[in-house]
Image 1 (spheres, helix red, strand yellow):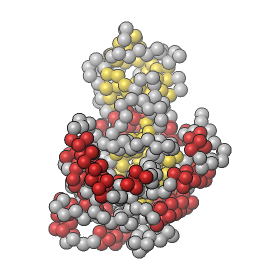
Image 2 (cartoon, rainbow, N blue to C red; image 1 turned 120 degrees about the vertical axis):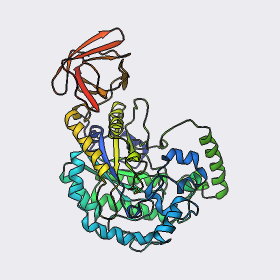
Image 3 (cartoon, rainbow, N blue to C red; image 1 turned 30 degrees about the horizontal axis):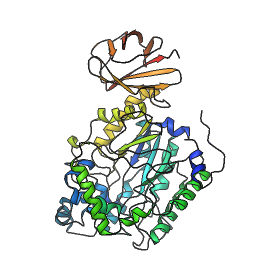
Image 4 (cartoon, rainbow, N blue to C red; image 1 turned 45 degrees about the vertical axis):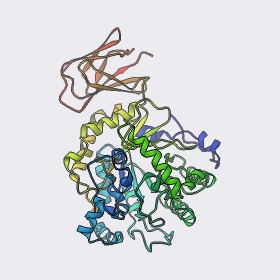
Amino acid sequence: MTKVSTTKIAPTLESLNARPLPQWFDDAKFGIFIHWGMFAIPAYAETNNNIYETFRNEYDTAVARTPYSEWYANAIKVPGTPAYEHHQKVHKGAPYSSFKQPFIDGLEQWDPADWAAKFKQSGAQYVVLVTKHHDGFCLWPSDVKNPHADEWFTQRDIVGELADAVRAQGMRFGIYYSGGIDWTFNPEPLKTFGDFMGSMPHGEYEEYATAQVRELMERYEPSILWNDISWPTSQGSLFKLFADFYNAVPDGVVNDRWVHATWYMKLLRRKTVRRLVDWLIKRSLKNSKKEGGIIPPVIPHSDFRTPEYTSFDKIQKKKWEATRGMSHSFGFNQNDTLDDYETPEKLLLGLIDAVSKNGNLLLNVGPRGVDGSIPEPQLDRLAFFGDWLSANGDAIYGARPWHKPEAETACGLEVRFTVKGDYLNVIVIGTPASEEIQLLDTVIDAANGETLDGAPVVLEQQGKICCLRVAKSFADGPAHTMKFKLNS
């Protein structure tokens, strides 16, 4: 068992990187992300493409046309986009700030204890709340004054109330903060990736963002600091922030989206440089056959990586966490239909697949802004996870990767492997058609095993085919687990 280090962490790369990953995070496997704020009042974004497809197909206005409803404040600044036209027609071109009061009014119906209970029932072990997204609006009564937006926060302490509710259910609590983007400091309309990365505020924003994150650390002692996009200060200042966090929260973790302000990022403030970058990226995307989402770059220090709407195809030495919404958006999007939501089975496979490759899954919910309710399709998927994990959680929580993450059965079903102690878990995705399962190109040196509900399973190795004979047929279900005690 990995123990939490009691050694004082110094603000140096050597000290930070010598700190072991806290075991609770490696064991937890499944967390809930929450994108909620003023953007959940208009609740609008396009639904025809995922984030990667949008940049590939609509690059010149991609930032204003993403499927992310939480980016609405920028989208409505770019004439000609569907969001701009929608805003003019439905909201008569009102300023984005007009959504603040409806959101505040909706808080009267918000029940953090109910949220926490539903997250616990889903099998989640931790919760990460967006405390400030790109629109700069804060979900806690901050004492740090925003020089460009007066009282740009909620008087009700959403962060504190949810932290208490989550911890009361025995889960860990973490905070997301948009460190690299804040449109109250830089209101310029953003269209391209070059615009987006070149828009990180500087000057007074460096002190502001640092003060707010330190305020969140001191008030709420989060187990996770989940920054987004980049970070406006120097590397030295960032390392001091990390060290102070670890010393205050010895089993805390930080993610990988803290790309500090560098000379080449500062060059992106120049339009000529941004246009060159845009030309190169657009050309690359046009010739790319890649599908899926975004993988942030490797940085000098982090506890885990965060691929977005995608995953790794091999076992990773470094801990990682797949993050995604249940549809193409994180924030609630009123345009989403059931067809826009990923199926519960595919989402569950995302969890099982991540665990087999040394990852976690951070699955997002996007509550409504008008009353804080979680849409039914999202609740259905949380319940689906809870049902499966209540029966199969022993193969997920606390498990580690085997020497290979996956295989395929002779009848074409996907298989994932995890190890827990001396036991190998074989998770078949879908329902086998018979009591005999043949695992192709797989050698398992183990004794006979059993399903998690106790049915015996005979293991017979036939060359490179591992034959598993189950004492009874499988009931229909999204995935089925068998476990075997390894011989070595």
